Length: 299
Image (cartoon, rainbow, N blue to C red; front, side, top):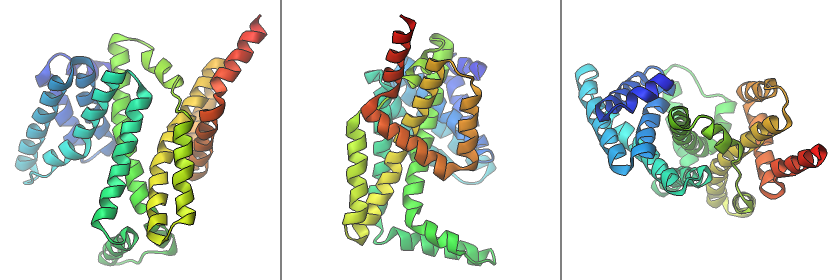
């Protein structure tokens, strides 16, 4: 990974090549799209807006040309540009300006919220839209949607917005990690361990969640989808708390492995628990508390 980042930083053509190849390969292996977005963000973080924009636009042109030759379609280039690289470029600019991972993550949450707002502005009933889409997909496949899928229609918009937000943050985190590997070893680890949102995000999440219970049907659905996006930020906050406490207490790193295994196999329950940890930490700051206890114990 360090080699890939170093190669991308040799010059704009190398960065364009890395971003474009990762984008095309992601059509087969989707997670590779994070590396393409990470390349755009890395160049932006290190060299500024114009250099990042050149890589972004150059990669979009390269993907468009190659996809026309191979796939007979020009869609992938503009799709990567609009749906991933442009938002990630904005996040990288914010991180470069503010030197605050938290600020950049709030902007990512804003993109996720915008996704929800646009869909609700375009569709009278997003849940009914997803119901129609999946019924068509299942009928063409010769099957039928079960009760579990029927329950998923109501949260599909929020889930997609959350996935969009996570994809942007995944690319940004990779870029910040690469930047630390090349120029500031250990910097990203320290930055992520210190990540903490203040009470404002917690209060905002609780306020929006209350609309899901107090508002009319459309407003409740809209609020529920927005809450899913906010939970993504709190989830990452909770993960940062666990990482910070593991490092602070000096316990075995296997605990972190257990956390990620639980996220993989018990995603809803573990994600809600970690989000609750992030929400509580917004007020109580567990790392500062246990850090102070450790200092007192060392005296």
